[in-house]
Image (cartoon, rainbow, N blue to C red):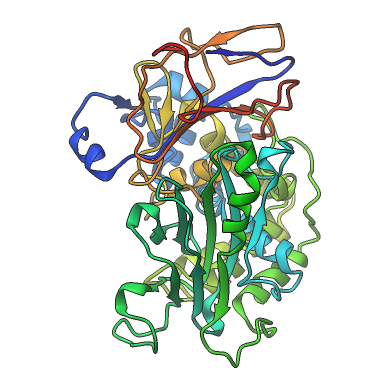
Length: 481
């Protein structure tokens, strides 16, 4: 198959939905090798101690174990910051940027949907992926209709209602992600979920609580009160769009407690986060590009350049709805709040330290050399723990950049390529054509698709034949194409 596009740097993605038994069967096969080897940039960027080691090597405080890795950090530390105390401060700033990378995005999503948190707990279907490719989603899947909702369970449980779908072959999923993008459950065709109502309850609901009209297998306990749902409904072809959109539109939310009318009061967690973002002085308008790796997703443009606002929004987010098993006064929340205060008062070298920390963090998140996933022998990379992050904050940050709200590998594996078989960046600006060869059939349970993106915007590419994907529903004249 030939890929052609003019004047663009390209990113190709194959998304495959795998049956769990196939993943288990192939777990020991030499599909790929780790790109996160000891001493690599990704390995050292995965902890504050590793980043400190990089900075101390870059400044000569300690000898560089791997000069090439240090060089790939691509940062110059001024002589008056090349001391132990300064490098420790820069390392902490960089690490907290990595930890917090998705948090202002999530808070801003709440704010942009609601203004003051009043339109959460409502689904919004997005139907334009099959007609208008320009979209503010990152690497949108052209095969599905998306329906997005931000949940705030601090006001009580929410009922999710799903319709009866037309045919068993129509893939659909309603995944539940906590406030930190960790997947904790789903309903969908892969789970043989039946139509009807399901209940999602917040962090303070007792594990053994019972709910009228809901059996335990229809109750999902969230580890946090803020949740993100991006439901997906498969579209068979262009003529099926309206039908798929109807099914997507019939996935709905309603309060379990009918005394809640859908409007949240000003003390709700969504409202608190919304005010923190809206008070930052930043809107959803895009800002400047931030370096060699392209633009940040939407709201992040320019915002990371304001460390006081960035860390304040992150601190409020963590204080409002802490990670599971943490409190609002956790060490993490205190650290982010302290950095916000320090950044507000920073001048001179202290201000430079914050900018250097940001630069190091963005290199760790965006540089291909720091990718913490796996790479196949043919150059495709993928993250095998997406959606189940735990304390793997660098992986979470990297997924925020490319596949935010990713499903776990038991559901989908996202293979991406930005270079050709000679490790050259995919670039059509000089008229390059590329051929992708793969065996058919691919071992996907539900569906697979190959999509081409603009590597800067991570959006679909407008083209004269309106072809945005190749998938398992396309007829191939030969077995390998």
